[in-house]
Amino acid sequence: MDGLNFGVLNRKTTYSSEIGEIPNSTASIVARFKGKTNDNKGEVIYFDNVRTTGDPISADSYYAYMQLETGWELEDPRIAPRSDPDGDGITNLLEYAFGSSPQVSGQTVMVKGEEVPILPEWDLKRFGFASVSYRQISAPLAQDGNDAKTEGFHVQDILYIAQISRGEVDANGEMIWVDGTAGGETVFEQRVPLQENEDGTVQVRLAGLRGLSGTLETYVRLVVRVVGFEQVDN
Ligand SMILES: [Ca+2]
Image (tube, rainbow, N blue to C red; front, side):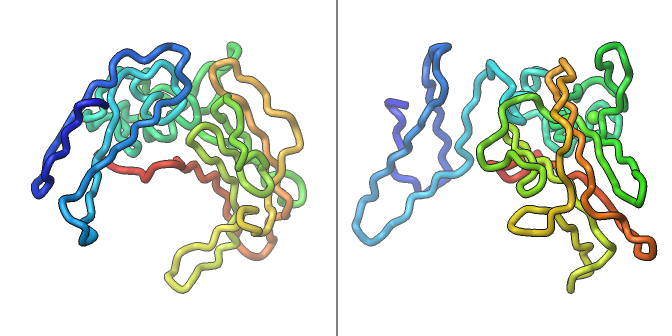
C-alpha cells in the first residue's frame, strides 16, 4: 500500500493501489489505512467503499465462491447475493450456502450417483416432530457456532439456524421465530454425524425437540445468513 496518497479529502476521491504478488503461503493480509488531519479540532476522516480486488485462490467466502464459480467481476450485477441469474428460483446466496452452481439452472444436484434436492427437505415424524435435512458447506466450523442446539452452525461466512414459529406475531405484526441462540428455547438438535456428500458439502440432519401443536399452526424454516458483511444488492 506504499505510495497511497490521501492528501486533502474535501471531495470524493478514489485511490487504488497494487499490493503486488502475494505468496501462496499467505494466510491473511492486513491493510492499514492511516490519515493525518491538518488541525487538532477533531477533524474526522472517513474511509468508505474500501475494496480489495483480485482472483481468489479458494472459495472461503461468498464473493470468493462466486468469482471462482463464475469468473464474474465484482461490479457485475449477476454476482449480487439476491440475484438469480440462472433463473431456477434459488438466489446466489443460497446456491453458495447449499453448494450448487449459480450458473446451472436446477433444483437438484447429483450426489454419489443420486439426484438430491438443493434446498432443505423438511419431514414430519411421529407425534408431530419436524426434522430437516440440508446441504451445508464442508469446512471447519467457526468457534462461535458449532452447536445446532444453541448457536446454529457457522461455516466460513455462513450461519445456518433452524427455527420454528407457533404463528405468534410481535407488536409489528412480524411472525416470531424461536431458536436456541442468545439463550432462546432449544428447538432442534443434531443426533447423527454430518455426512460427506463429496461435492464440497456435508449433509446435516436435525431433529425437532418440540412436537408441533395439534391445534395451533406451527411453521419451520432454516435461516441462512452471511456474517461479517451486510448484504448489499448491486
Ligand atoms: Ca439460481
